[in-house]
Length: 420
Image (cartoon, rainbow, N blue to C red; front, top):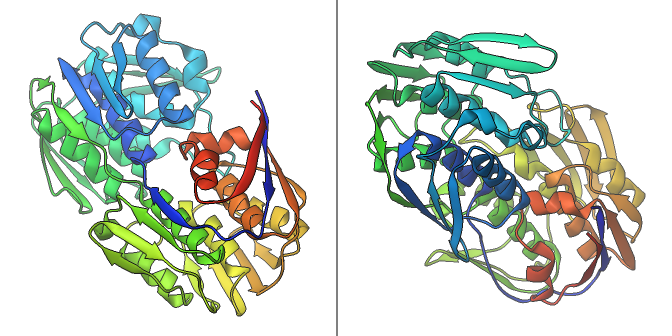
């Protein structure tokens, strides 16, 4: 059901807000439980629609899934049966592609429809298929259905054609129970990829090179249950930092992992944002002035593509012209047109670059959340805009931010959700 957020902007926000567990770490870990014999207890899991959809897929397989705490999941996939998988649940979300590797490893055959997800540009699956083929899989596609089969998976050297996060994660999950040693070169090294590897090692996998672009995996015959805590969400931390920088109050953001935020901290400083970090918390006071900056989204350890849209809103508050460049996806700048409706001075140069000049006042308008990160960014725009902003399609934001409207209200924001 569709919903909308109604925001009355211009209010200072003050207080403390905690960063939730990382969606992009929780979803592959949930998929990886398919590989495990026994019970897994996963802490710090965000209560998000994407997480719930992943759990729906596990349940459709016959797995035992329960929320045993506010942010704690207990999962046991011992009785899973691939014959009962819900194709509609798979097709509804992009993250369902993460089931390819573990289902192939466990059942030796998997058929999945083309996954869904945000419309942010072309995201082909060839990197996934190529890696799984290297390990011994056969891939066929007919009528929108991908079928992968493998009599056995055997370790080898896998060179990824791009540093795909989910492609790396699928290769890792397929390799942990393969025969022999697998070396994955040009692997993605994002913190959530590392978190998946840490979880798997806790279950008995033998993965080394974690956090680098070369992963070495010695296959094991089986994995056992374990307990794991999902890392804090670096994307949410960066989004909240931008909110603190533009809303003229003082926000303390708790539960961050500073080691995951180096490039985000650096880019904030380039924009003139003053903040302090101490004891796993970040304090962002009211800013006197902000300055134009340049940003290029690239794979880790560079600036994350999921944060370029929030920083696009930050650029409207900065003196001068900022250049934001996202070469990774050609559909990630759709939010700019919505900001222009609100009064932003922005020129989309091509599908990957935008120039934003400021500071310019923003005014409330009726706008639409085009994808998850665009939706969160337009919430930021609404918080600083004069008058009333109505964001349609607000349920998209729930895919990656837990109860964002409730948490911002606790800081003094004037926003309400209607419908949904």
